Amino acid sequence: MSKVFAIYPIDKCYSTGFLNRINTFETRNLGADWHCFKIYFSDKLHEDCLKAADGEKFIYYMGHGGETKLCGACGKHGEEDVDALVREENKDYYIKEAFIDTNNISLFKDKIFFCFSCNSNRNTAKSLGRIAIQNGLLSFVGFGDIPTDYADDISFSKRCIAIYKGIIVRIMKQALAIAIKSDGSVYSLVRTIQILTTQEIQHLLLTNANIRNKNFIVKRLCDFKNDIRIFGNRYAKLS
Image (cartoon, rainbow, N blue to C red; front, side, top):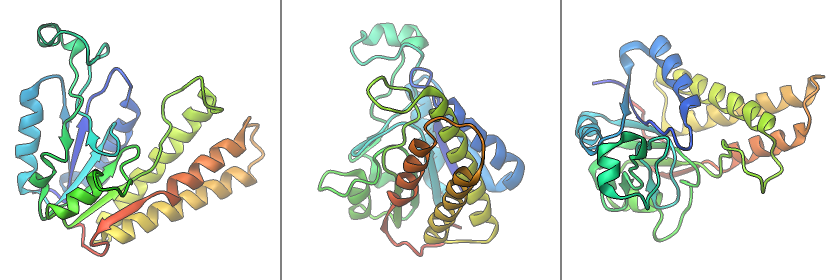
């Protein structure tokens, strides 16, 4: 049994490849206390992951998701409207749109579920975080909007997004290592994330680096740390 069981669905369509830096860092720094289950393009691997998580306490999900569901693996051409037979025969078209949702979140009863995924902080009648606690999870940590993909309709350039992604990955990998090594709680992990984010903001504001639209990055980092929500027992020990 590891202290952290990470669930990492591989997504080649909307790339989450940058998150592997967290896995690489924790593998080196936490050793046997860190186990990362990378999920590739088959329903069986998704089922195997859920079974493997059964004996663990602290689940660390990192991937795409939203208010009511977390996504599984996705091939580089993953689309919902592609014929199921095509997806089965060609893994490039594979997609697991709903991997963990309100129908199976109860599988993580008595566990801490740390959800590093967009809009997982919503607190509504149908939100995954609220229903998780109703189904017996100890704690559920959710995040707000995390813009890691370029979109034409937002004022966030590709360079700004690259800088932003680099910063949040640095924050997350350091905060987790600190929390696990210090035998911390859910709350101490979140506070460490917030403190490290504040330090990164201060560095950005004080540096003379020629970063265009630096204020956009600062605003997004402020949102990143302020939007974290803890459902359930915030003082539950991580291990």
